[in-house]
Image (cartoon, rainbow, N blue to C red; front, side, top):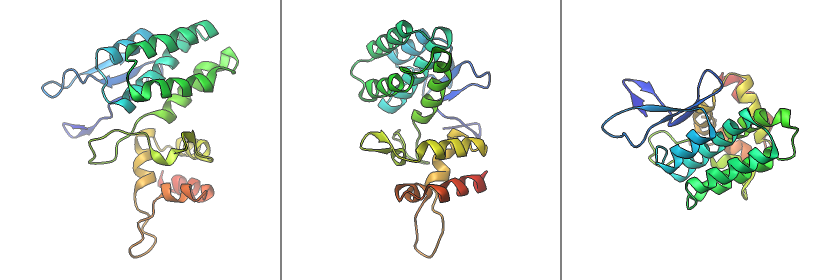
Length: 208
């Protein structure tokens, strides 16, 4: 979404590193307004009141909601409380439970001191993205195989961040045709599907 020439995503981590910003979709199309999510309760409310809409985007908001909860209290009890509160916020949303299960699996067996950091990284990996010009939000298909993260994805995401390729640009970099030859429309995402992880990592570094 472009507002006054500035591109926006519908959900992003704020520069303070402690809060998440969303475009309040209850205000659209007449008013452009963002809302800050700083607590589990903020995230659950954003989902239940439809400030975030669309199954993948709801999943992304829920994932960040788990992170926000663990920032203040990383106990098992609070993790379960966050899971239950977010699930109840929109129990029929397709990607909500899937995203929550992904977050639970990522942090459940980690030491409490590590949980918030792990949750933030996992939420960033699950964030919904949109192809340029498309109207449908979706999780990047190149990341998953049979519902599980594809081998090499964690390395690719880490390499992108280390190279300064922001999450918001990762979709574009991964899906732009490489121009390897006349009529060749292969993209980095296709190379990842071929398990050519080293080439993908090298290309991401070159793209920075």
